[in-house]
Image (cartoon, rainbow, N blue to C red; front, side, top):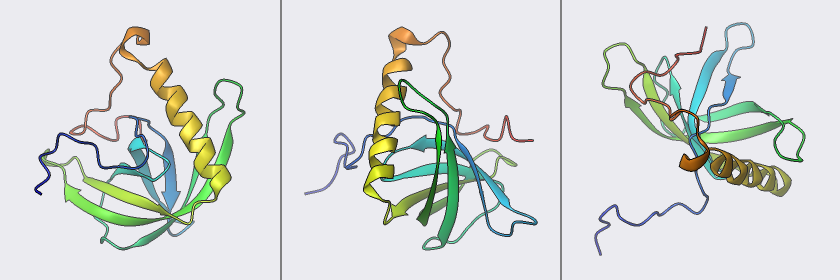
Length: 141
């Protein structure tokens, strides 16, 4: 059966969450900005391409939410997709899947995504804050 795009195939709920991270050489790290996030992985923007199947060591600093305090999550992810954005100088869209994420971290991310969705539901939004995929890095500096 051919997939028609009408059914979500992901196992984990995904939300348009922006979190920043860095990886690579500590003296000259590569900075990323997530476009969306789930307990299974994330998509992000980068200023340079990266090969699929590249393993990344990352640290995401989650802010506090609801009754949960903020905390860092250190993890590894495998790049599963890398595509040039349409805008001439916009960079690259990367998708990555977490590798061996501990259950406590996966549960924390799941709670954060659920909280984010409830707070950012259309009826609770003051303004549309959905990231524009063609203009990433707006707040990177």
